[in-house]
Length: 141
Image (cartoon, rainbow, N blue to C red):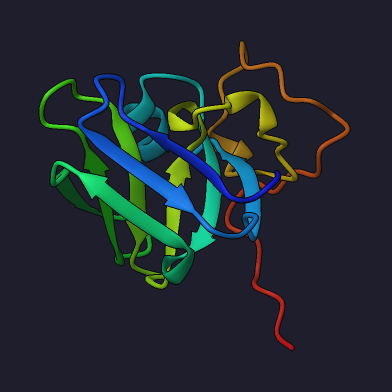
């Protein structure tokens, strides 16, 4: 994805801009993301918090513990209800943007499917994209 890139909610009350390309793009099929999106998965775009500039209205937030116990803070527009981004307590220095909120969602290119154990049988997952039944282990440098 080319940088800078931007996006926001459906009504335009919340806007964001990202200065650099994402560090990760992938589809999360966990049950929480299915509920939050009302769909089969969350197409996620991860950027460092320092590259993420929020403007406009203050988003509403919904906090929910993940299956592992850390907090998932989902930010949405209180005017139109659009989900915009989330903060995963396991990686609090990242902002996870909902790809549907991008000004150009066509730039989204998932590199992995995670939590595929929760994927629905009607969800046709691209077999060319790597899959993990849960959260893959982080690579240590």
